[in-house]
Amino acid sequence: MINLLPKDTVFYDLFEKLSGHVVNGAVHLHKMARDFPRIDAAIQLIRNEEHAADQLSHTALERLDRTFITPFDREDIHQLVGELDDIIDEIDALAKRVPLFHVKNIQADFLKQTDVLVTATTAVKDAVHRLRKSRKLSELSDKLIEIHHLESIGDDNHHAAMNQLFSGGTEALEVLKWKELYDYIEDAIDGCEDVGNTLERIVLKNG
Image (cartoon, rainbow, N blue to C red; front, top):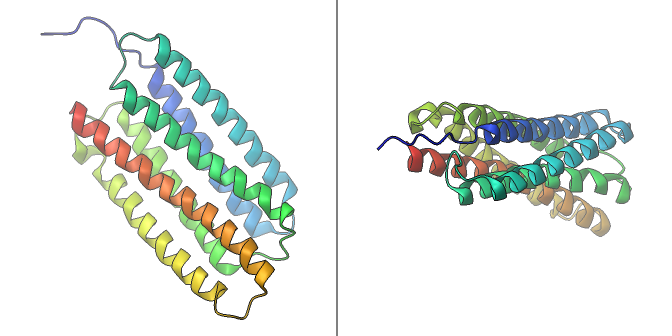
């Protein structure tokens, strides 16, 4: 039976805009780390991206509440919006703590993780953009594989950073500060994999 009721395609616009804010946040974080100690402008830009993403998330959920026909399951829309918003929230929380913790310098392992995050969020954005027209897993598989691969690289980097941090050559207070900062960026990278898993499930259910 053919469904003659139109589905609300505005959700795709919202997903794509959200993923754009996620990438922008990651790029600003990388710039903040690279340009340290000149961080104030980047922190404000990240904050702006987080606020804009929050507004889009609220818009998406309000529209979900009043839309009869949606592109795919409401639960999946809710989850995808929440996971995209979570990534930029992690980035914003991390950025706020750099001045709060009176960080003295940026560690090389941390800068490496910002590179991974930029690449992972870009892959997420590309996959989200394909969702509008893709109904086969094969049409997203290269980006989903890339996201999973980058998450593994992020795990390895995180492990190496923790090994160095707890090797005994770092003051206890600095260990506490950096462990939290590394955990935030690890969570943001993990969030990219969460989005990839959700996109995979959506395509499999609606293919």
